[in-house]
Figure 1 (cartoon, rainbow, N blue to C red):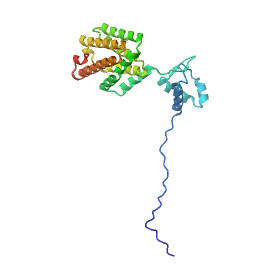
Figure 2: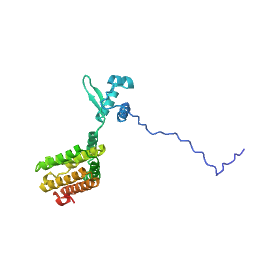
Figure 3: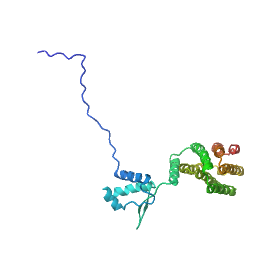
Figure 4: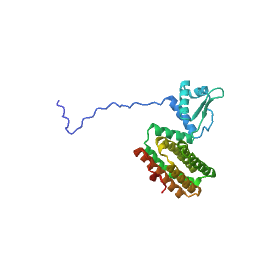
Length: 264
């Protein structure tokens, strides 16, 4: 018997392919435990100074090995979320991150990533005028005293350039603190330190530059004291932009363009 020919219009049934799977990454038990404790700290469930259960109890409660529990605690200690105290009465105690943690993290990123000095200046120009404006609205008597003290120290430094630069950083950090914004305080603390550490201007900080800086600080502080947000922000913009130009001139030609740093 002759079999009917297959119609040329029919399609061949494709062969079924065997399913495939990508490799799975299974988190380490220590990372899982660290993540749970981290979340409970950051959510506020574990307050500052809370003592975690002793290591033996953690092993019993979690069903994990002692080595795994210890590794999880070390992870959180490195993240500065736990303080491990040795000896009798010691153990693992909760340490909630503060503004110094943010400043340290930003500082490490700046150094580790070798962030360009020009990028640091751009960031400062974007942030610090806002700090000054907020400071004009939120400053306290203690904030004003801190600004005055830092600027007085800057003037008293005279020809002691390292002392002058330290006082300068302290003044800018005081402006950030007066803003009352924890994130801005952390960022500005790290930025100010990084900018002055990366800028070789010490040999060029002559008497004129020091005088211009002190006068600019005084004008900004006056606006902050008067509660004039617009003026404080505007004067800080002039000040930090002038410094950026002067610092760039040092990097490119080995001298400071005094005119660039003057108040407009």
